[in-house]
Image (cartoon, rainbow over all chains, first blue to last red):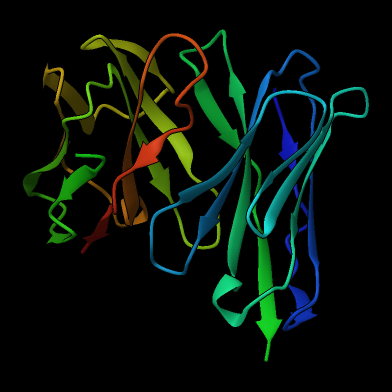
Length: 112
Length: 115
């Protein structure tokens, strides 16, 4: 059973701070990793994808991957109240219809 | 067109009703997915279609019946549902082959309530 684990939160950070969201996965053979943002009552929105060890930056977002530790994280710099949402970590199984397995999500609250 | 369109956005149905959810994309994606999401839970995979053929059925009860009439359209036919089937039903699509542009594109979902 492939598992993706996240702390459910809520993670509360003040406006302007760095929010750090973490995710671990059980399948060492996983190759593709994604972060989705989901506002309450809305569908998930892809914000970052990462495939190689190291950091990948896109605007205020940085994804970090460490395959040896089976760990992927998302940093949000200069957090804004509009960043308040649930962040879903997802891992893709290249051998099973490329299906995504989601973690339980971390709820982020950015306080003004 | 970079969207996945789902209709209807909201659906209330009785346990004896038959209804269908529709999903459409015109991005040329050849993999399409149905996910079910309960409140405060992550999406759970139901079905995977690859090149219009059902490739994965995650042991979904037969009261849910998927259909992929063509490469742009995915339906989910509903019959004799139970109240516990009330959830947000998400359709997603993905380009096949290689790694990118990658990630799934999700539709806005259908909020289903079974009464």
